[in-house]
Length: 291
Ligand SMILES: Nc1nc2c(ncn2[C@@H]2O[C@H](COP(=O)(O)OP(=O)(O)OP(=O)(O)O)[C@@H](O)[C@H]2O)c(=O)[nH]1
Ligand SMILES: [Mg+2]
Ligand SMILES: [Zn+2]
Image 1 (tube, protein in one colour):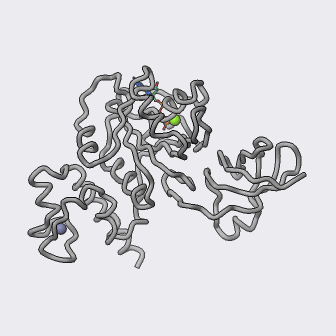
Image 2: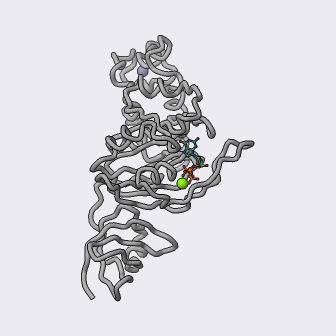
Image 3: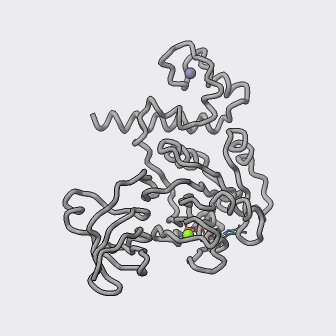
């Protein structure tokens, strides 16, 4: 028996799988965490005490560098927001919420347009390039863009997030060079994935770094961002913010708003601004229901 440090690579039904220098241990969290309503997350660095060669208990959770709520992970350094160029076609609102939540905790971000082999034009590619994002077009079925993706991932802890069926697990397998994760199909009629991945899982990359494959989602709550800070999570707004007429301008519909004017002149993508306005409304409503 001993004390080991490790990282939670997976959590299922109250069991946490902790990777240590002495192998993976299936652990329960000490009751005190539950009493405090504190849930261990994939990515947490922990101290465990083992009871045999494969079981133990989590005694301590080290202080987190950051927490993402959706997907629920701790200590990641980057987000790869994965969308498919088509099948399923991207939902810009969900993508923008995901990006904003990552901007809010200062993660490095890449937007990965997967399924480039389908050769579909996707207008959103330019939207995110123009907004200043690292855009990587990939295919999990040929090697398109995989080197670019590897360059982004190397030596970082990256969470892969995005809708069901976009190819997060397929890309993970591609990067690992083995069929480690189960992949599903996309319903042609509904243009929707089948929620094949049920649990987030952290894996080490053979070329350095770690990634977390996560379950796809179809909606996304975002009321952790304070309204006053929402505009800052849309990175391209800053460069066009030349001072609005009202110092407390919310950049939605006010007259002489430099952000709204930049949308009109095409400098800021309409879809990005629409997401901002919609998120603003969503957060505001959530606030009003709390107080
Ligand atoms: N043509 C093409 N198909 C792909 C590509 N990547 C994934 N697919 C297919 O898309 C489907 C869904 O892939 P998954 O890897 O299971 O998607 P996922 O994002 O992990 O989905 P969830 O686990 O449900 O969130 C599978 O049929 C894959 O074979 C790609 O680059 N090109
Ligand atoms: Mg998956
Ligand atoms: Zn404004």
